[in-house]
Image (cartoon, rainbow, N blue to C red; front, side, top):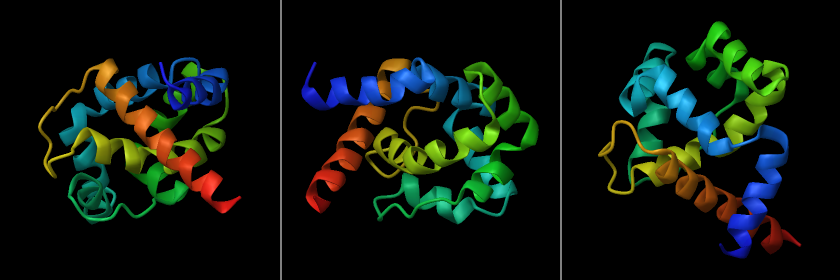
Length: 139
């Protein structure tokens, strides 16, 4: 395991337990990547989700957009599994979900409807590398 993998696990693992399992549960609840995409479309954010899947740049998502796409009940259940309030989960998801979706769709299309926890962990590690790399470049 590399340095970034260790940092990602420590940074997210301390607060969330196993973040790959969390994201896997989110995708499973949504009906896979296509199900999550449908939720974003229904919330009026379909184009945003499509950019994460595409080979284009990945714009961020506002916590309020995530809340609308995931729904109050889904968000409450997800946060409940972690033992904290939904408003604490939204900023974290808004930070990493676009990059994770991007990494899970490297060819610009949804190839794996239900990515494995290992695939999700790899995508999360890559997203953390990007976030940590940007942090160190600013210093």
